[in-house]
Image 1: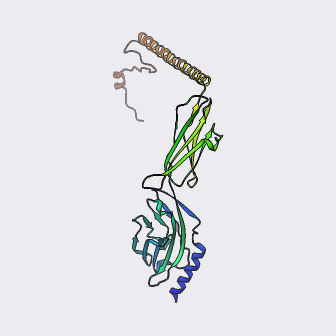
Image 2: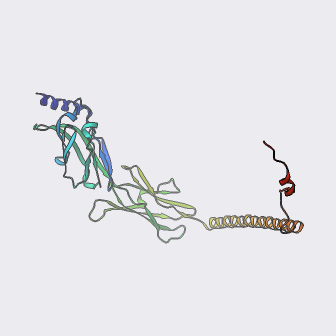
Image 3: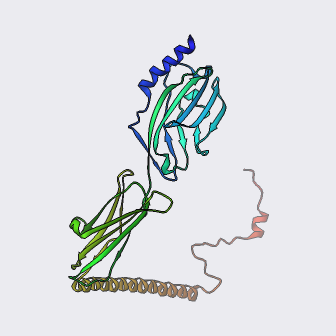
Length: 306
């Protein structure tokens, strides 16, 4: 009777404390993710003999047997990539840590508890795991072109998931017409990770900055390529003049510092020579008063008690 009541309590508690499947945890490919599950029931699990199991869909990925709060056996069937704390019955935290995440790990997971000897288990938690991958920083290349003529800019990024949002910016804010952009999206060999290549055909005008932006919204990650700035001859000449003025000013400052240091060095050398000439090599004692007394007179003086 007590065992049946325990199962009923678990069913009631799980309806209040389970993590709903639509609250997805985001895991990053190659990293770790924790699927949370906390038992908040009224039963003291450290006094019971129970078994627990994590499932991915209908597939069991991790099972454990507990005897009065101590783990007796853990069976990891998910390529040895799952871990549950050995203190779970004491803390109530049955969260599972999934290592070295793969793209295929995206699924709905569930956690169940069962009294040993009972056929019926109780659902405690359900967790949704979705997978994402970081894209490489995009590279931006430009075909040869002349000012006022159409040229092509190529932007490439790879190794990420899911498919990103891709767009171009002209002068940091303006988006070019969609008809001027062609995007190619393929998957890398032996994986489902994306290889993105986008091409922008644009007329090059003077003093124009063009940027390629790739957004992975699932990771809240935005990558921006190095800007290419096209300068007119007038702008290039102005920039060259600024660089020349800066270089000249830097040379003047360095020259003043060198001249000042030489002046103080020569002044110090002159002062040292004057002191040596006035006092001699061995008879000049700065800041020291010499006290001369008669040793014979001091030795013959009567002793006194202090």
